[in-house]
Length: 293
Image (cartoon, one colour):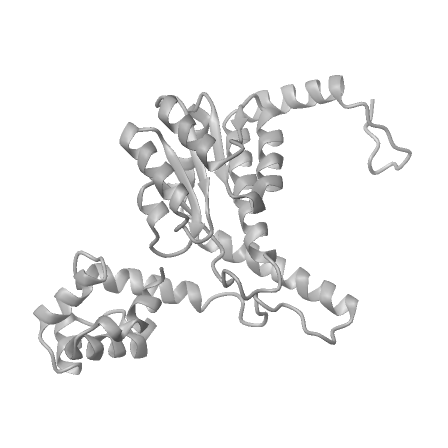
């Protein structure tokens, strides 16, 4: 859940907390640099009350909250200024206009996803996959084709990716596999109960796990040692298609594959091309597609 959503859910707040929440919602990016004493004065409360409110939201204190809140607002105010990810096209748009809007949506989605990546988390994820004996990619049915594409790519550099057929099957894999394996858990909401149960089992057994979820706090990411985030602009239900979500997952998995490839670039390039020539009998008269002897 985004911090903004937590602040708007003021039904559970006291009057003093509502005053602080309203102030935070008004200030947003302008909160950067403001001291806890200044917030207390502006909301007619005390620094201790502000501190307790931030802790109630799940943070260690005000400074921790402020950093995360400003970072979230920076993300939300970037990209997607000229296109709605939930309704990227309108009823009377021509087909070519729709094509142009989907192109813009794709461009914004990739930029948006890239902005959520950090060097540290990406390095950690790639190293985890590189060291894994087997990689288990667990996701709901909507991502099955994307998962299969990732499995095929990884197989060409000698990495085994297993896609469990069901959540139950994934759970049993978590019960019997050891720390030499790695799991990737994909869930946009990060709140699917069976995925959370799976993640808890992996954490209990010390098995490396990478979550791919929406941005913000969620139960699945909280259970995983490495967290990657999908472009978070679409509603769960009231959208015209999962254009942005699917592309974002595809982009992240392609990035992970490319990272694993890069670790042993020359060896992977040589073996992939050699084995592709042995197994893929593909020809074309098109000079752009045709391979040179």
